[in-house]
Image (cartoon, rainbow, N blue to C red; front, top):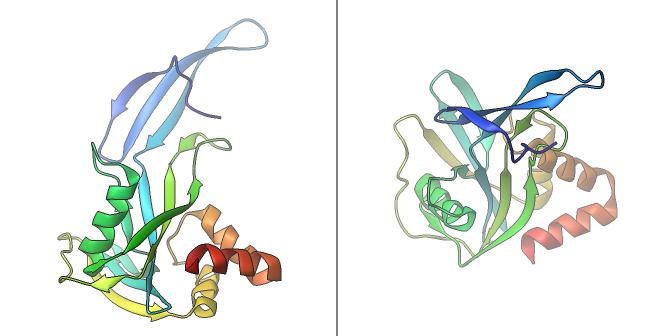
Amino acid sequence: MKIPKDSKKVFEGILFDVHHWEQEMFDGSHQTFEMLYRKPSVDVIAIVDDKILVLDQEQPGKPLFPSLPGGRVEKDEDVFKSAERELLEETGYKAEEIIKIEEFGDGDYSKLVFPETIFVGRNCKKITKQNLDAGEKIKIKFFDFDEFLQLCRDPRFTVPIGFKFVMYEALLDENKYQELKNNIYG
């Protein structure tokens, strides 16, 4: 379910907001319901010379994990600008073309709404050094498409769970494989 329009934001945090609303029960009584809204984030599948750029990332209190370039959408920033910014900051690469390919996390199946958007950055070129946050250590690796798909089997690989399902489907179904490859490479 989505956060109801008549809900009230009772807490605004750095990552999460908490929404409450009254809902009528079947017996006519009312109870307070609650949902979390997590600030939106983006991930970028960056293509460099037909290879997919993957990060080996370390953050305080977390072991090393593979991920795509990405992060939280900043206030007053649309998802496209956020994808471009995160790609540049975390890798030093700029995409000639950024295309939205998937959106996840609208809250239909949970008490958590977490909008996540997956982009493809095509024809990426290195234009500057990485500009990492104080809490990031990032090394860049390059994978071919088949190696990239195998990352979905790694429980440490941090992408939206919906996109992991897309990757698994591509491993199991030749049509889904071709569809995802076409979405990524054009």
